[in-house]
Length: 428
Image 1 (tube, rainbow, N blue to C red):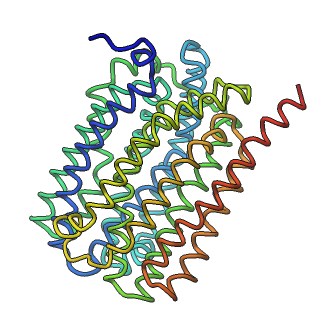
Image 2 (cartoon, rainbow, N blue to C red; image 1 turned 45 degrees about the horizontal axis):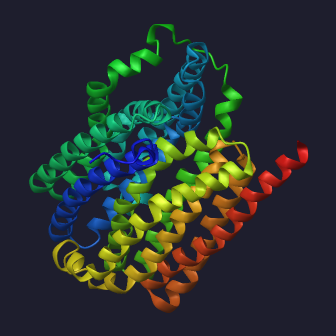
């Protein structure tokens, strides 16, 4: 039986269906890893793993000076213009060199202070120094991923994601059994190297069609264009992970290491299923929004995205909610305090998905002030709500704060996105 034409030609549906398979495999492997970590790490150890992941997320932006979404946007818009792409990659090369060098200096020479901030002890300073050496790989990974997403090469993306994740997972488990917590931290720190190797294996031929490595120059002809994305990335990635790290410290101080572990478990589960949407935003949403200039076409595309994504997301969330006891019994073993968190986290993440689909218009149209305002508002609300509600409801209050901030965030984003089209029409 032949599929209807509109289904065969629906790029979002193709990306979603392939991405769903990858995410299900990642979840299956990821749940096994979470179970092993929660069973084998001492109290507070899982929170340290969460802190390292926050640090790696910060560096994923800082090492490349936050130009990932800029590369996605400009590759999508100019993939047929080789001269423009050469300017783009020359500028990206300079950004990554500067970002990697500054990252190395900060991490290597301030390793003890950074270790104390993220891991509550200076004894992990050697982990920070390892990450300092790996910094260039983090930058390269982000730049090349930007090219893959800008070209909407979702099949390559799926292969790279799955293979790199499985190899990284095997390494993490092996190091856990061999060296316990220190082994896990080292394994997570070295994941960018694995990602770059896998990426080069699968994607190098396609990459050479668009990037002429021999002609890359130490020049920044698109400095201003990419700088806007650096500012947006600084807010969305670096500040977000600093806020999460501070909230983890706050929970540890107010409630104890077990509370920090429970919250880290809940956020880890959330990030695992939210990966489902992350790839779609960069592979489809930003490239698509970049080519839309009227409110009518934008609304039409938004409806199409919501019709495709929200039902799938809702079904997955119902499965997770009704199976929450199984997650606690078999994956996050003995994390009993997680059970009341599920309802708040799942509702919050559903509203978050609705919100950030709209908010990607800020990336697509380089609406820097709107993006920075909404992100800072979201982070401030989260920190204030988490601090206030944790005094009343404990760890559950932190997750309630996550929900309340996204309700407000959605309202503000809807207002700003449609205000943009109103002003555009007035100018025309």
